[in-house]
Image (cartoon, rainbow, N blue to C red; front, side, top):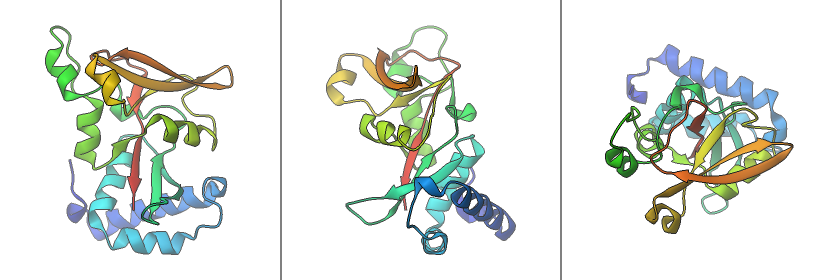
Length: 187
């Protein structure tokens, strides 16, 4: 995975221009926020730029969806219409990957998110994202799973069907060509 410090000035500028353009096209996701303030925070933290570059590279189309109440920082989230193509066919976590006996996927959602420097959306954040648009109409996204569910071998995922948001369960070791994960990043 390419690190932000490895991005040259042109690559950083292209990423920032992509993010600015998406920000301006989707003002309903982040009313009353100013791009230049967000850009300054991004430029001050190359690690966050690296994470956003990975989100973009894997098809997530990250955009600002609000402010973090605890830190006052800005919250970026994958806003691609469907689950990011570059993160599909992953089981839930490393434990599930290790326990799978046959037909192992290439990796896990939790491990890939950690490598990217992002977190999986939890159920509440996923439902909040769905208030900003219609996401996962044909795909689904792994969600951060409560420890009690994971302890029993399960994991949760969400999607939107029939104009409703659904959260379901599956074995954590399952994986599908139409399921990925959506990341969240606080800047």
